[in-house]
Image 1 (cartoon, helix red, strand yellow):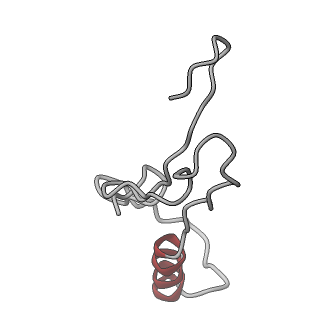
Image 2 (tube, helix red, strand yellow):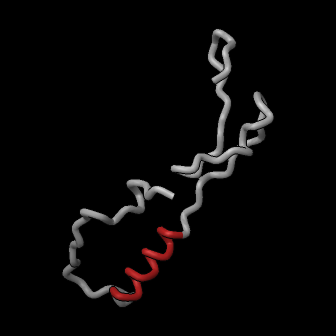
Length: 76
């Protein structure tokens, strides 16, 4: 799965706070990394427009196929 902007730490700057934290920094950083890896993609809603909606997942990002109606009545 491709990392999102929220959980990609590449090219991020670490700023050290001048105060001592309640949780040791090594434990804090380990927990943050684990939490960011545990983030899940929102589950697909009930398919209403096509029987394939929610059953097919994108191989790149992992999101489910959706069907969207526009005002003209065409489905995409």
